[in-house]
Length: 373
Image (cartoon, rainbow, N blue to C red; front, side):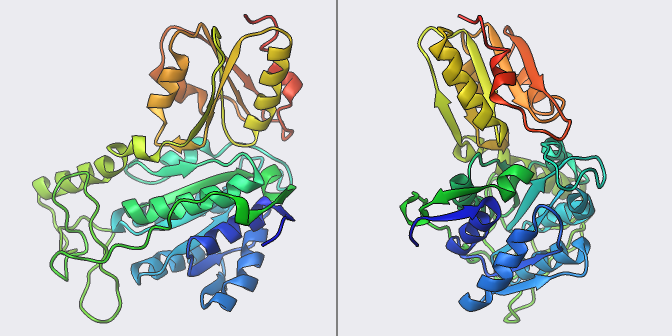
């Protein structure tokens, strides 16, 4: 594909196709609808299936069903729809099914301002299911990264048998940039690992951080998938030892591989004692503000987190080593800053925050950097 103008939604859809997506279901919602319309047009041409569900509950449910049948599945929504996804997100965790969920954030709460921007779902995607078990969430900063990180999301979903979120926002979903998809580097595509345990054991694992090989509901054998507490065969189980082993497994298979999931851009400056840590759409304003601050003589380093969950602790701790001040710009009231504060002690924290449905501007970030040395 030659260089062409596209928005973030189209880039996500084309990233899904590049990753081998075979099934999409979603319900129209601003600003995510472009993902639905693109895949409704493109997936059937490639032998896949795209469905406009009757609502959000049905849409994510169909995706979970498609995944248990062995298909790579994607759904996309915004904040109000994400709230309706909550129960089925927990089901996907319990079933250990690969699933990619795109959340095109908008101003909230509730229906909010449907055509305005925000970054208010950062904590919801992490904790918006019963049990509070770890998930994976990636946050692109550009249309090109929407394409690349969607591929990464599918790879992570397949590798760890887990739901993976791509966290966008209204501006990134609907803004157009010229992109040459063919020129963008991509990792090798991860294919679903077929079962090698006993053929009826969809949850067979040895070490707690191991990922069970996948046994599809393909009609060739009897396979049990259940969201209730279960054993390796999918049989309902109430034994405390088994329950404890499985719930620990849900944690370890993500947290033990946090370093492998870590995606960041690190832009250090020698002698800097101020560090800016940003993500998503606000990283673009932060990059410009850091460049302008440096031109004015300030010494500032900049870390862009593309993985939000699990928190890229190693990169954050290294970035903040020796820092006196940490600045975290967000289009919310400090939802990710608190994660950084838990990791790093010593520096003074400054949050450049607003949630008035307008983008955080470079000048607003710069105002908090001027005079730094």
